[in-house]
Amino acid sequence: MGSARDIRSAYTSNAVATAGPAQLLVMLLDRLVLDAERGQTALAASNAEEANRQLQHAQAIVTELQSTLEVDGMPAGRELLALYDYLQRQLIKANVARDQVAAAEAVKLSRELRDTWRQAALLAAASA
Image (cartoon, rainbow, N blue to C red; front, top):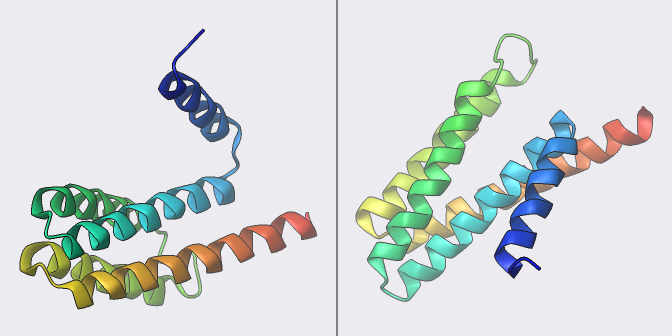
């Protein structure tokens, strides 16, 4: 019998392998929210090392979102790219300056993005 970590890893791998593009995006945004929240919590606890680790992972997710966004193929692509850029700057500011206000803004924005994309994915699935 596998450990809890092995079981969770297998479940996550299966979920990713069977998810559609919209579901994958929501899963990625779920992780972004988790990392931003953990980074904010670590900053509040004055745990700079953990805050750095979590916020850098959140930054990597935003970089991935930025690099895979098809600006030309999406009517609101440029606006979304600007939003991702703002989120990235807030994460960097939170990390480098240990700015809890920037961390809170990053968490808020990450949640809003996730919730918006989750709703869009549900609507797309319902109309399919």
